[in-house]
Image 1 (cartoon, chains in turn yellow, green):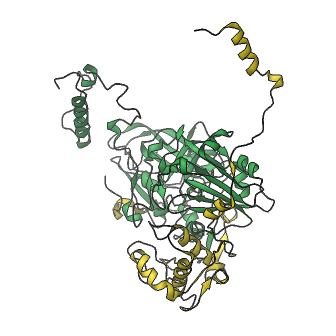
Image 2 (tube, helix red, strand yellow; image 1 turned 120 degrees about the vertical axis):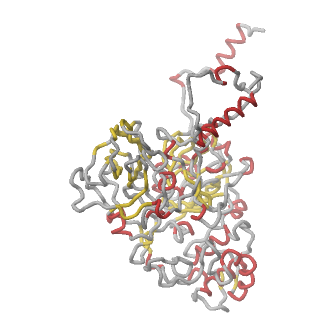
Image 3 (spheres, chains in turn yellow, green; image 1 turned 90 degrees about the vertical axis):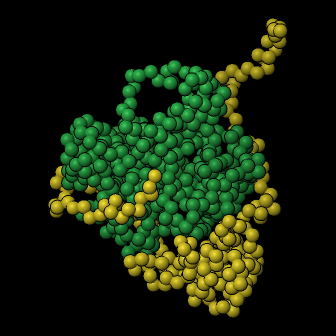
Length: 210
Length: 413
């Protein structure tokens, strides 16, 4: 079956736009307006100034049994870590040592990070199952085990972000552009002293085998 | 083989010869004898709707280092750089780094929300995004911890493990500047929190300036949909910045007036210095390079004569301008050839022909970029950072070529 001459003409007239008449459209009508309840369902992040902390409360005493039940299998009863799983407590004063122990207490700059992370990602493999009260209690337990709060101290949406973390002042913004501005491209006679091998990977023998 | 049309028999014979090759067959191969593939029919076009590599390339796979992490779910594997050509990483060999495992996300149940300090918060489906103007760009992605096992000395014997937390692909998606224009960012909207839909709920703070410069939401990689391991159905592209910021399975962008200081930008991905202070927001992947051939995986065993020295260079600040090669542990340097195309924030292949007469060598590559930055030595990096900063090791790397052509990862003074 063929399209008649009249049909062709009509189709052509209906769809043709001369280049001189073409107007590039702006983007419109794509995407839906996010509804308040949709935003509320996903907006769980917490900032150091406390913005985003949900209403709730908990103490280390409340958190102790919960920690034993839901966290200790990886982090140990007191946050000391099991196997290679993260150590949450201790390590204070170790950051300048040969083997630093970077824990919540010795390293983390803000308490808000603790709430934000537990609420979104813990327990590992069963994320987003803890209530705000449970996250306040678990955070309180970890902070108490680091001697940052008292065991009976209630943490809540009003005081949680006020807690000062001991290592906070030791963080600073990337300065590599200034402190590591390497620009010398030596081409010959670059090493004044003898060149010696000081370590070779096969000696350690930790490369995975086929 | 008796049945000329027996494909199973043909495949079995192929697998047997692959095994014989791997085991080092005593019988010398004779390419000039009649072969099964020259006599019998191969598989038809309906045999393999989605193609796979040759069975003889079965050794070219991602590998992990089991002792590196507590489990294989929150872990990393490495791209087999020594077996790759050009500068593109095939999708099945792109390194993987997950914090809550490889999420399988149904695009019908997935949305991207943009909200916070905006005039009009919006929610997009994958199909919505695909209607928008898109761009396709080549970028490398590198984990901030690439080379992180080498700070205290040579540790892993293979460029897959010393440098394989880097890959390079063509990404297709919508520029974030397009999406930001659609939601209307308020004047105090200076930071963006990117969040993933996975079990880790990965979240990172990114300055608005970077978002508007060259960030994208990508749904395709090397011409096809993202693989689940790389964030299907959509991921954030943050060119030149550490891979952790390229949030996979991205579901939310919140605009704010300050950073969030999430776990992955405080507890992790901060760089502890010797004096106990720690750098944060160390986003840029500085200029780096590695020789992939020769390497521990690609030795010159008893093969004197002509060789191509070949490798990869990259810079998160811009384009690679050049690469120098040293054969004597960094005393003298020879400019290598760059094999185009050379693109900013993209892997760049370099090479240098070389006549090897069996001499022992300490071979290195040193890249520099179009900002004038020159890749530093281990001594330079350690003098500023010590050995506990984990991340951003871009030190000049050394392979020891032994008289028999064997290659080892070594470090020098």
